[in-house]
Image (cartoon, rainbow, N blue to C red; front, side):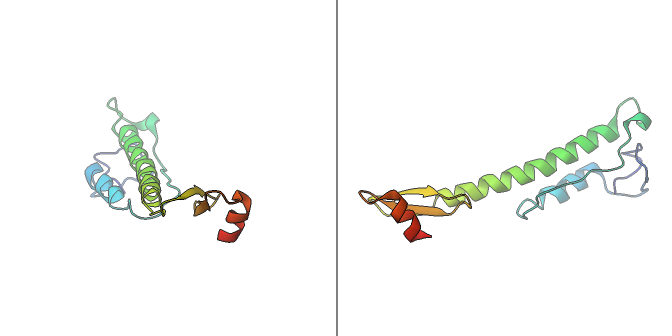
Length: 116
């Protein structure tokens, strides 16, 4: 996918491919999607020049993919934390991340069963 003049150490050179800036812009544009995995293939530093531009571009793309995944999870956590909880109530989270409201002075286990 990357232009072979910018990333020469690859198994499938792509003349006229995307620049590093374009690839980063595309990956950053995907940050609102629920991406759970990423893959970078065919970077061969052994065939890279002294500037190691292919390895550096590959490292930057992996960084961008991981950053998108972390940013989305942080945004989702902030959204969950902003949920309104009535006064006089406590809240916790179950394993699925759902808010569980717990009345004060009531048996905690009974309240959780009622909410589920």
